[in-house]
Image (cartoon, rainbow, N blue to C red; front, side):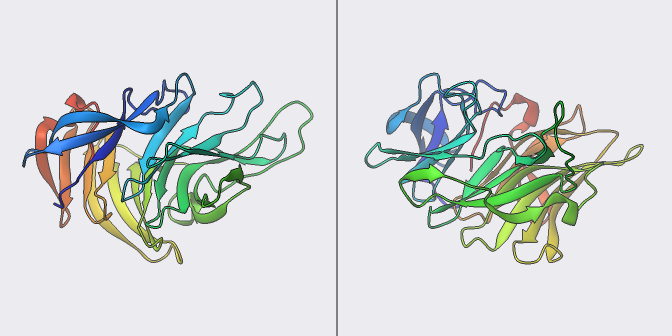
Length: 280
């Protein structure tokens, strides 16, 4: 395990688009071999007030932090946004996502991760048709997608992004789901958590490494057979994106640990249900 000089956190657990979200971004200082947090420090520009933000991520060197802003946070018809904070100056840059259009495929923002240079975000989310009265016909068969967005500038319009991976290319979208996606520092690999199971006692939680150039080039890092159903709480990577923590398991037996050569090495607390949030 590499030593970590700090980690970022919010004073509320980072939820999804419907959650309470991020209100205040702080830097956490860990001390000792146990990795216990000894103190928190306010981040410049990290006070977000009542903004509907979630999905906090940071660059490996901690110089930039990004949060996803829920649609409607800045007015009834405002689109999803990505707010990037320069932690050295406290400056903000705001990137506007596409608006929902009837009869068109809309990509929602769920989970994000930075590439190593801090100029690009890889975002996992659903690609869904926007339906409504008299809406043109629309069809989307991709399920979830991972799209990459260049956020190197001072802000602006994001556009549709670059599609890195379609769920339909690697798994049946009617049975299985991607819960998390983390891009490698060089942008060459996505590490995904897949959950699902289409029959009796066929539940599973799996961690996959998938090439961003060719989705057929993939390998299983870890797989847990969970029987009839599954639980899933948390997935986290170290700064170099080489080691991973997961809290998952059968519905009533969630386990918490780090993945080592295909095995789950337990961490305290061993029961993942006791964890509110954790990071490598």
